[in-house]
Length: 121
Image 1 (cartoon, rainbow, N blue to C red):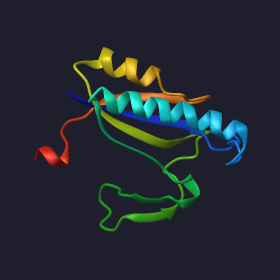
Image 2: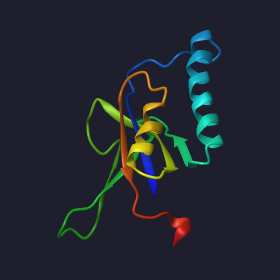
Image 3: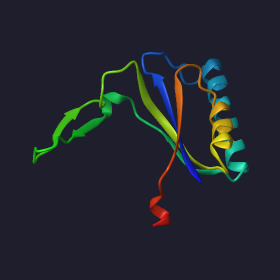
């Protein structure tokens, strides 16, 4: 079964400056996680997202023909979706074990089973 791991974090948390020792340490955690996940054959896809300031939201309402388009994220929250992984796992327990290994310093990680993938249609 496929699971999506959604990574939510606080965009106001300052990321280490590229080129700094702190950035290299931060990046190495992610590179190690990616290498381990890919070597396991559980990796399907993944990507980080640009900040919510670059987002555009389309909102549809019942009974309203035209959707509303607004700049920014869907809702005002402290934590924003920052990236995702799509993995394959035998069950939720295995997917949760992969999610627990993410080198996320603060925030939340949501794990959800998928219904299907476009490449399986």
